[in-house]
Image (cartoon, rainbow, N blue to C red; front, side, top):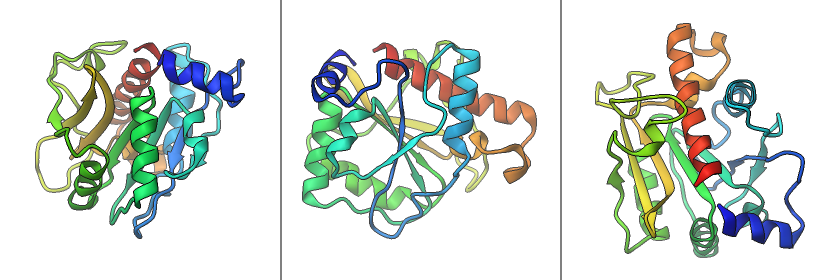
Length: 213
């Protein structure tokens, strides 16, 4: 993360008191705004449990905006269509190859669309399934089986896919797990406490990886 933090300091866009993360507002018709309580709850959990210092309210950023480079971690979710235009593709690629991290969490129904858009961003890189031995599943919480299953949709196993640049994970795509639903307020999906905690702990692992690699 050193490169992007240096860039942000030079641009004068990073607070020295607290980090800030963002939700991606994309085009194409999909509900980018799904799970409105997810990121605030994840931030609260991480600040209380793993001593992060993240601003309590997440920002919203568009894929073609120069503001994208202000956030070390950007989260994306939704159920439907996604489309990135040419300038957004270039901006997203520059963001991730400069040290930024994009987490895409399929909220059910995004898969057929987002894979095409990921290929536009990284035409020479294939999405690869991340093994359970990867550090993102090891700390601060242990997930020996890899990405946890939070919600059932099609009865498929949960999977975590990634794009790696120079051996660094820059894009994480979580599929058939629906972590964001587990981050939501308890009364939204009525998930048991242990399921919500599992989702939040996996989210903490993701942010731990972002801030320490």
